[in-house]
Image (cartoon, rainbow, N blue to C red; front, top):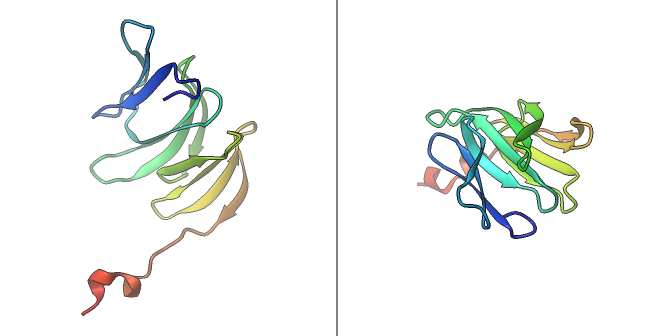
Length: 130
């Protein structure tokens, strides 16, 4: 849902992202990229979409979109496939797919902090215990 509750944002197989305003007759297509994950900002009119390949699970970028204007604001390359907005919507954390965890400033599109990817050790995986 949008922060004001006036619309729903959803994806469908194949990666198309739709904006469905509750007072409109039909949904509007936001983008038609190969979207793996979708995260909505808690404030404002912004979406973060990880772009990649469904079959391999690989992601090559996270795109930040102004969904009402259907316009891409930023393309954050090598950002992984997971994303989360800060409470004020000014920062975006990305990571996953062995990419570093990065904190992006959404006003500048630049990384403000980075950390090594978090890896789970196979020895801690309960499936590997005998």
